[in-house]
Amino acid sequence: MTPLFWGQAIIAEVYALFLALLAFFVWTVTSRRPPWLVGLALGLAISGHLSALLLIPLALWRVGRTNLVRFGFGVLLGLIPFLFLPWLASSNSPVMWGNPHSHSGWWWLVTARLYQPNILALPLNQWPSRFGDWLGPGVLIPLFAWLGLALAGARYAWRKHNSLPVALLLVALAYTVYAFTYRTDDAVVLLLPAFLLAVSAAGPWLVNKKPSAIWALPLVMLLLATAAARDNQGLDIRTVAEAGLRQIPQRAIVLTPGDPSIAALWYFHHVEGMREDLVFVDENMFQFDWYRTRLSQDNPELAVPVIDDLNSFIKNNNSERAICRISLADFDATACTAARKEAPRG
Figure 1 (spheres, helix red, strand yellow):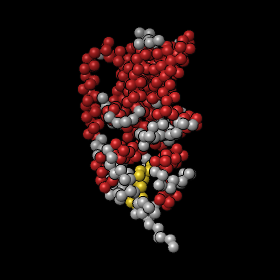
Figure 2 (cartoon, one colour):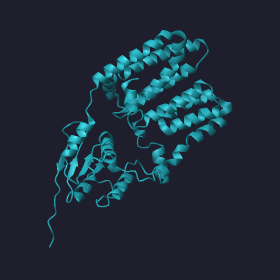
Figure 3 (tube, rainbow, N blue to C red):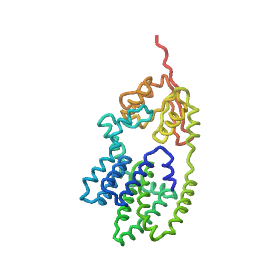
Figure 4 (cartoon, helix red, strand yellow):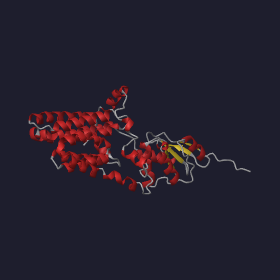
């Protein structure tokens, strides 16, 4: 267990569920389950994260041409969760993403249109810095170790006329390339499937030829995890949030710079009831029509523009409320502008 896995296991994100669905798919492929079950597992994995589309060649190769109808039926069953999106979005949850009630909004969510421009989009001049950032005991070192073991397992299986470990290794490499060239700061989490697939490719060889390594690997992973935890002493988000929110005046509008801040503040605000008098507005999400619509519905007292105009929003609401900015990336990122009370007319 590396810090990369543990970090996703203890937060509300999609990757832990996706890895469980991916493990289900790998089990159906490696244990020669019926084609419809392979398709079901693939469809569920795709509904968990669209990067599961990289698994399609492996699935098609495994089920064969004669079973495509049953396989396709299973895939359609696995994609059914997408149909539940409008119903799930009908709740009064204060946290919402997208508007699946319209056909265009539903398709925007299902196809992850917002994230498509990031695929294979990391500029070449940023490759060295990314490699340097990831080269450590928590990411690339254990990944390279497992890919090396998977290569050994694939070579052993190939001599035994078993090409499945080779196929698993190729998909693991595809995920590695996909994650490395993905243009976001948190792209490292996209390496998680590569770990799982590499372990699956190396497993049979380790069990049959290197059983002693089975006992040593947990110790090695523990040492790497300990070293990575020592190298990654991050901020105490709760401490930063509490310190920052104490500085904010009553009924202020709090602007946040994106996911890392707004997600944590949503939790403190809506789950723990911290500073319920505040209104949190994310600057990145303000560009979306569905976000501004929901912001207006939840806070009818605010003047929310129909178009993407954050400056207008600040100007129109600053007469009644202080406008503050807070970032949880560091301790000194809270700043407020006091409400400018308009002079009475007459």
